Amino acid sequence: MKMFPKFIFKLSIGQIVNLHFMIYVSDKAKVKVDNLMKEAEIKTDDYFLRVSVVGGGCSGLSYKLDFDNEKKPMDQEFEDNGVKVVTDLKSFFTLLILLLIFQMD
Image (cartoon, rainbow, N blue to C red; front, top):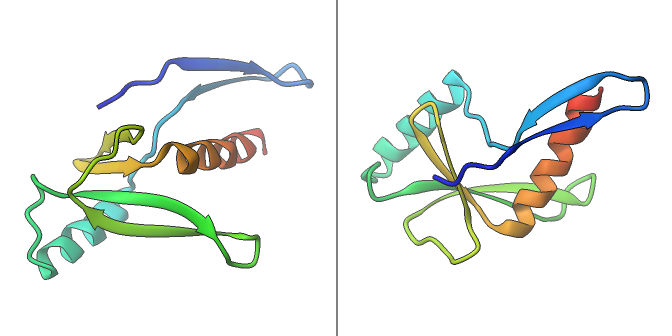
């Protein structure tokens, strides 16, 4: 699992926001992922959840979730709540930008 440094961003209103770049998995999402993997007879040790951002949807972006067992050289790996999550570098930066916008609200 790659760990990214914690960054501190100073906002114009003087508020400090601490960010740790990570993909987080809620308890409900973990249950859903576990159930889907069980239904598909996928071994959790060999496979992970791949999160991708692709073109489409109302905002021009859509999120794609798949089970995969092949990591690519520039993939970003995370694990939270017992769920292994992998995303390609381009999707990671898009997800990161969404996180920053959410944190600033």
